[in-house]
Image 1 (tube, one colour):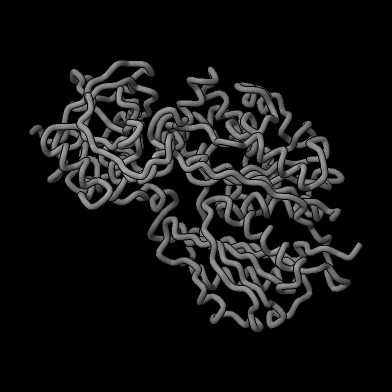
Image 2 (cartoon, rainbow over the protein chains, first blue to last red):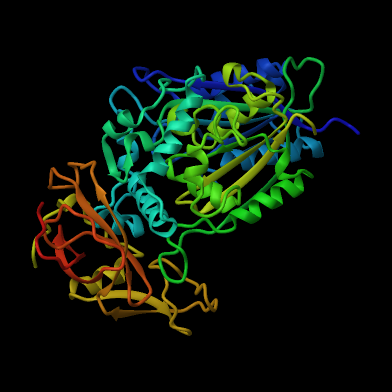
Length: 385
Length: 142
């Protein structure tokens, strides 16, 4: 069997809070790091797929990135927007294009300029919405920013699953236990209940420690056919499935549940020709602590209302039966949108996790969500093609 | 029209589409919402095709401004650009009897959430140049 396309290089740039963000500059730095890992000269890159990101920042990547870098003649160049699932979609597309011979060395890149010395963490996201359409009406109802939207989802979950704040804390504490061993994580001290309860409420029941940590930075992946110049294990994209059901604001549609998550889970495994038993780590897009709770149940990993106790029992921690968000996730790690869980999956599959490395990690599943749990994507990645 | 206790004029929505009909109705003191012209299924404000029968025409009708609380939260981070208060305030999702869902706060000062299932009625308050629905409540201050 001929070698399939794989992730052969990865670069990550995370700015400090005092640095002036520069989306394009950070993206090019991340691309250079990824190309170096892949053993490529930048001029050998012939494909550039950009995660469109106009969520909050004026400073975002455009197709002009191709001009400002030192790439070769590009055979493919576009931006894509599929909310939080975009990076996973782009990685699958890049894999398919390289396998089809449309290009040889494709970069998939994301950059964000969410914070700066003059715009502290959270401030930019709090102003999301605008004055038109539904978001305009929601703002006139006093609902400001994404945290409030997910606080409502959390309340729905609490009511329908007889759950509560203890379940949110279980997620925050478990993920922090992973972040302790992640040099890229923004906060690396073990989390006690006392510290959690001291964190300010943003939109009850969500506290600051229930929310992702925005950062300015970039992530880039090289997708190419592995060769002898690759110094690290290639990581193969083995299967992907997705469902998109934009949230309707009327009956009988659910105001909070993601539609089709269980089918996404089984479809992705089927595409990868594997089973759930082979998944030895699960990386979930966790902009808020409520998301892993909801998604674990909707995927069918645990039963309804069982996620909190499953996590509190240590099952998702190091040595547990199903390690989840092994870099601390977006909650305790860093929020580079859909790139965050992908970075950790690649790190684990390459065996680069250091003290948080899962023994013999061979297959990861990355579950991304978009909007208000409206888009769900499962990507199966592995060290075997 | 009572001036809103909660939000500054800066939080008023724009009356451009898809809020034109909605805000025109509220200016007359009515909660006007869209339905499928064929099957009368409730539609989102910006929805052009019916998700129930795929019909492509809609009608705007005044509905009973009443329904039930599905869930509510407290907004603790107070954004001074939009909010007059310096304390947490409730944000409430209401499932209207018409089948539509909306996000509102209360018509008078409140610092408590509302329990799911609570039956509520809405009235309008003034935010900038727009009339905005709020849950009728007796003033609640802890």
